[in-house]
Length: 397
Image (cartoon, rainbow, N blue to C red; front, side, top):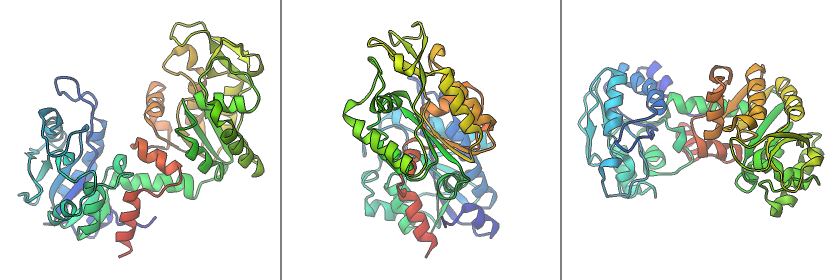
């Protein structure tokens, strides 16, 4: 995918004394007192900001935070705690600027944080007047918020249409490269893990991947639906009986290409959904009417791990069991460690997936960890994200 990259503009000396507007993703969790409880996204935004500052630009940064009502400021919607944390990380003052749409004063070598962009009326609907005002604030627009790349809003899409130059920051550029490597030009075999509670929420992803991958591993409630479609008993496990035809269609599409959706041969069951419930390993054909399937069994986990270790590319979205409960975490841990040990290029995304990666400490062994939840899912669905589309179009002139 051809987009202009901030790094290329810096290398060409094009940022000196320029006004640079960075759309970052600084939407961090806070406690009831407004204290930031986890600052990964803020730390991840620093390289882009530092790159622009070091190149002699006058830097403006904005982000959304939470779900504010447009035009109605409330203290809990303010980026003030983010400005304080950014100041610490950058080692310089980062003033917070309110009511910034009609003009911002910032000098080369300085950075300001523009108050929550979703407070501006027309932001979510990509209002043209608002987008043009934002574009008028800068010489160069930098999109560095992959988590918002699937949304066509004024600060993510409209400004990119009208700014003199629109480019991808280092975070967004890395996402583009990783997605391209994993899906557009993968090293084979390409194996995808798609897990979650419902087939319905990931049906389009499953259908899209069925045309691309060499192996499609399903887990969680999704696997239960596929087991049911394969004629296996699932007891009182979470499943969607109304989607059996769709599950069979995915399996048929894979089979027609000489690929497969491996159905579990053994599972871990319990009589209740609880951390202290007694876990029992059973053959997939032996699940009782009052059993809940909460994980894949050790035999299945071993077979899938072997498949992952011989993969060329792995795409991972979702744990295969209730990994939050230790008794039902073995399947997810086995697959996670197989991914870590595999020489494959691996890309992982989604909140539960990231939590599993953190739990097993394999961050350094996954080739690329995506920062966007919804955006990552839409990429897997085969959609062209609005941010990718507009930046590609601007790069083409």
